[in-house]
Length: 147
Image (cartoon, rainbow, N blue to C red):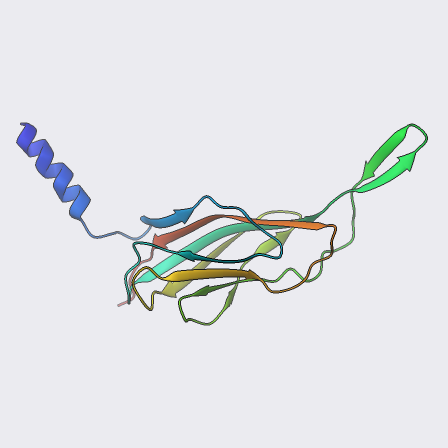
């Protein structure tokens, strides 16, 4: 019986990736002004993948002095200039959905132009000093192959 279990384990480890399988991920959190390149180890040239990331930008609350200390007020003005972009290998740049005040999820499909494709993420605009941003949850998943 242990031999049958070992065979099942070997077969499950040797199977080809299925759509939705996680290929690569990073636990890093990127902020505004970022310019970072990752290597998606495990990607294979000519294979379709889905890149996922979640991003959000928000205003730092205003601190207003009073006689008894400070109070904080949320800002209501729009945040203009959110422009995070991602490049997969030597492919053209694509835009990441980075939400204004609420997180937004990006799902971008790409075909790897080489094994272990580099993924470059850049904040392509200078946001105001009082705006904070983060992009996190970076993942590459196996995509369904097109016929």
